Length: 197
Image (tube, rainbow, N blue to C red; front, side):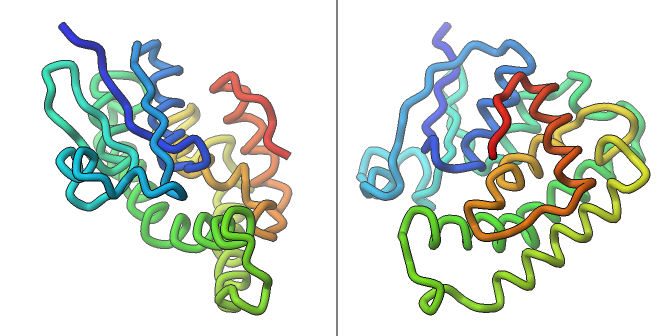
């Protein structure tokens, strides 16, 4: 049987989520570096895997492709302790996964990409992103004021999804509040990652 193959861009938190889950669960995989900036997600070969032209894409051992970072994480973590066994906690985890893609990634990741990779001056970046991102980080900080992880007492996919871009928030010009900073370090330690400054 063929190994899991992950097409991803190493500058993308969405792609690194998949790496983090594979690492945590000791899932062997082959990584195919696929640069967004070089247009490698727009080739006919890649669009055949994912017509949306986005990374990550996982090609399962049986050859079936799966896109969208959180869908890939859920598939890979099926039956593991990264998904809470309690139905309500599992729904809370999903709540944070949906929020991450709708409210968090669209601000924190987008501003970081414009600033750190497209090298846009401040005047060319949507001015609404900075206050929106500050509000997003404050929602997280308030939630983490009385808990170590986002759901329950242990690491879940909610933490992995949210830490991927939060640990790079400063590259987008954001200043993560103290509870968020402590949580980032806890999750990085759990995943065996070096601290992202």
